[in-house]
Image 1 (tube, each protein chain N blue to C red):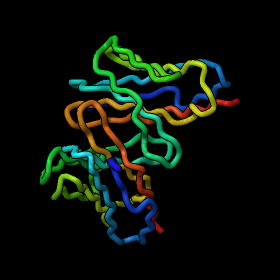
Image 2: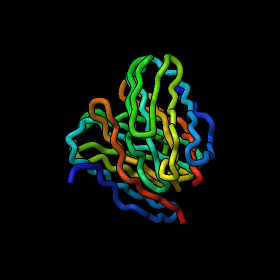
Image 3: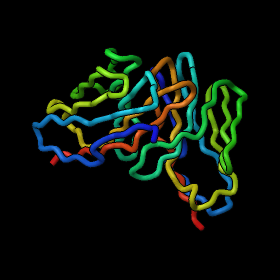
Length: 108
Length: 110
């Protein structure tokens, strides 16, 4: 069975304090690893898709990396508007399995 | 305006009633999904459909039913057999390397 574990569950940061979120996974036949941002009461917003170990993608203050067993989402010099829940998901065939998410709070 | 439309945004259901959540997409995507989200938990897959007239159970299909008669539409019925239906429901579509989500529907049992 596909499993996705995200850590930590919650992360409180001071504005400008860089940090990383972890997503570890076990899946048979990985077709893609996805990162999403979700604001309260909203649908998840797509951030990145990673396909193979060693791949990296960046968007503004966010950078996602992938190894064979885990992915990291690095937040560089975060701002209060980066506060959200970040979800990781892995795809095997047509099934997408999600982790429980990391809730990030950035204080000004 | 392209995208995924879920309706209603908020729905209240009496115990013992069936309710149907609508999901419509104009993205021309083949695959569609229904997820349930509970506070502090990740998204859990209810049903998914790869093509019209075909769908598969996800991890928590008991108490739910779906249909896929048109490519654009993938309605979810929450039946009275679902013991704890109060949750946030999300519809999604898949194309290429991206999965897109609707804005969700809140279902509350009263």
